[in-house]
Amino acid sequence: MKVVAINGSARKNGNTDILIKAVFEELNREDIETELIELAGQIIEPCKACFACGGKENCVHKTDVFSEIFEKIKSADGVILGSPVYSANISSNMQALLERAAVVCDMNTGLMQHKVGVSVASVRRAGALQAVDTMNHFFLNHEMFVVGSTYWNMGYGQMPGDVEKDEEGINNMHNLGSNMAFLLKAVEREGK
Ligand SMILES: Cc1cc2nc3c(=O)[nH]c(=O)nc-3n(C[C@H](O)[C@H](O)[C@H](O)COP(=O)(O)O)c2cc1C
Image (tube, rainbow, N blue to C red; front, top):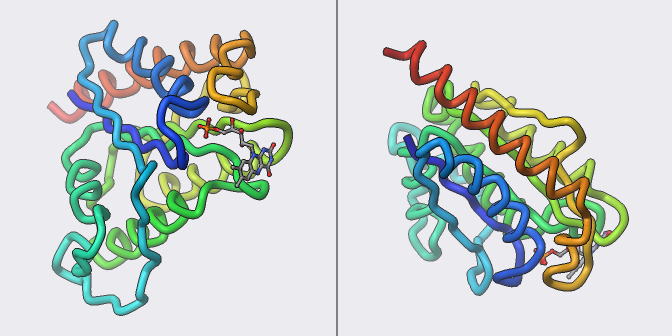
């Protein structure tokens, strides 16, 4: 089983990275393979609304890394979307990725069916709930199962590493990871 995580931050090794890796720790403990994809240094172009993706199962525009990332998402059993809060919501790269992924999924139904989804957001102070909700909307609109924890999936911090000091946030990520592993295994059992 494999889980692919997309980090929508403009910086590598920051707070979103730390949150995702706390979830990974629990998945790896349960022998679930993980892969981190970072959008830092990339520009994901917005959807061109051409709807040429019908029957193609991917975006037809190959001028950025979107198609490569989308293939990885398609082949994974679980998906983690992680974003820093920018302007009280997700980063523009994550927004562009989700807009394009949503249109490809709408034009090719069933691509995400029964995958397990987790969203996490890092935040200095405000906007994390909107960010988590925005990412969860993608899962909920495409037949995926969304995993919860004991709090909403956010960690507080501004500069890289600050989120480590948010003990409740980090504990929540570990619990989220073990819940994700539980659901992945349950879905796998049911599918056999
Ligand atoms: C462009 C930009 C916009 C931001 N907007 C917000 C915001 O609306 N609310 C907030 O609490 N923090 C905001 N922040 C702070 C980040 O959410 C915070 O530093 C986060 O931990 C960064 O995660 P990263 O280390 O993974 O990049 C913003 C940061 C940047 C660079």
